[in-house]
Length: 262
Image (cartoon, rainbow, N blue to C red; front, side):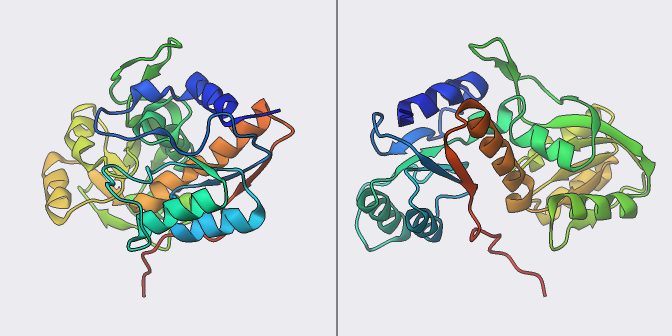
């Protein structure tokens, strides 16, 4: 019998919870450690509609990237978080969030992003430490692509991540040495430029960040928060299936980026 505790033990082998930032909220956020798990749904976010989908499918566990809550004080039907928690409890469904620990983990979000962006010879931009398994961890990744124009590479990133579009600011450089940083890693542009990168792929870039990066001499491609992180869902599905072949694991079919381009 596979339990939530068994899933948490597996997570400790590739994304230990204690490597998350102090402000973060990761691990089992709703449910029982001893609950039997036969079906797991994987998604980027623990949104209400995802819980509904998981419940209709009969999931015992929802495994997501973003935390369901950080500082919730009440659980009622008056807000989305409360409704989501109530729906999880009603369905007797556990919920596990893997956030900054999965961002930093080897093989995690940023390695998945680097692969989707076509990088070769992938390495850390910076190493933040070594986890209890002896594995280095850190946020951004650096790698290389065959030299090409920024326009061609931006289209490659768009296709690789399945984006509706990407925002691009050129520093007038050909693309060869690339840094990727998922989600809210925009602040790493200066570190990437200092490391000799000509291009930085990330999400959530602000107006001034594009200008600052241009002044640093580094191209920027903003592919959006959702698309730079959603690439980790197939990785999580694969890790679960490899460790527990008898599990049914499904990636959410209803969860999409809320932002639309017209």
